[in-house]
Image 1: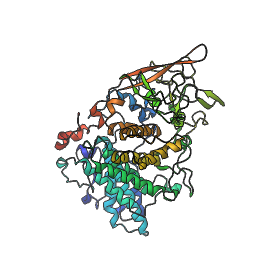
Image 2: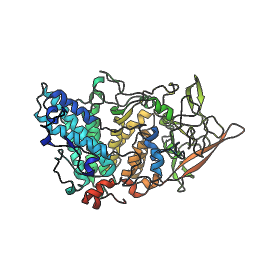
Image 3: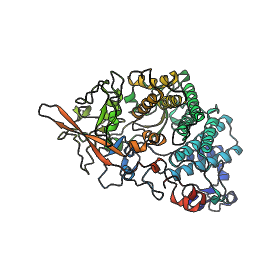
Image 4: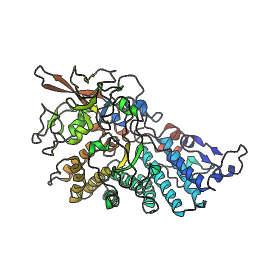
Length: 571
């Protein structure tokens, strides 16, 4: 029988009492029944998968996490709706309330179910022993995944290698060091990586969503990179950067051997479809996709001129636009700001950037990510539509809420949007939780921090730039210069993929990036030229240092004495 134990368990773990398994007069199946049969055992593993979080547009009011970072301003801001981004930027995160990205309960439940599976499968006889080993590998990857998603938000959490029994004293719990929980996550990943019964990728639709050795590599690489970053490596220990570099290198070498994984040719088209499961798949880049498609995504992240659109959704900021380099020179257009509000950009005079024609000649990924004034949107009522974000235009900026259908920044989201789809027809875009490009960027960052701008660091980041159609980075960069270029490469390559939100935290630059964001007001002159005025969207209230790590929920702090002493800084 499933029993609940204090808040720590009642919100996240249901503990099964072995003593109760033999007595079920109401006919319910017991764990003993489950783990006597290989079919039901595998079905139990399927329940472990069900705790995987929903990303993409599956937040409150069909929003995206980008609006809680400096990537975007949500068009629902000021509308009065309980939007995740409105709550977040208002500073709504507290120990008693998480404004919409709370994984605390579900991740603990996933960990608990994975532990129950791993404890019990050893006694189950399988007709195919290889199948049994594969399932064990999947469970370890899932446990590592759930732990990592939990740790990424809350910092180090107690390590449970097995499900606690009903007599476990939760008041005795204490938080481990970050390195301890990272080691635990990495060990689960390594166990899976060396488990050759696990495939490197899946090729059949019936196995869609199953975790693989490639997923274990991706989790390990990301966890070690974060562990080496300033937030969790204040002493800048080189061994942490070496572990991160080695993991990324191993992942890339393994995944790209025999072209099992490789970067797809077209950056923009890649985000319009999901994985295909064939012997020779078109999508060779995605390591794990976790969310399906839906018509609501297009409807809730749309321009006003598009039929079926209900709101603008997350509107890219001027800061994100500024991050896209110039195509011809490969140089940054904007290298900083003279003022705290970002209203006076520092223009790189040698880049070729023209402030009177700011959207000309930019990184091709800009055109695949952002709808801007003058962009051509195909298939609006069967015609090619010119996006008009200038004041008075068909898709104009409206700075005063609650105009939810119009941009608040002067830009609209282009990424994931297929212009060929009309009305509210379902998009085929899916959420790429892990993809090969991230591993190249992980390697570039870790290698540069470890050894400076070596050829290996250059090769990794230039691999991403080459696919985008951008020039290679100049070969005379210093370590500090290379760091800035790699960070910017992550910003544009992984835009709107929920990396920026976490990157600025692990780099400890949140106060520099999230205090203020800007948009652009465009005035059309009588001669059909445009004048551009930057404006601030107002100071946000979730940039202080305490927002680097989420607070442990108040229930656990109240019930577990050591948690009260070990609450995260600032909370």
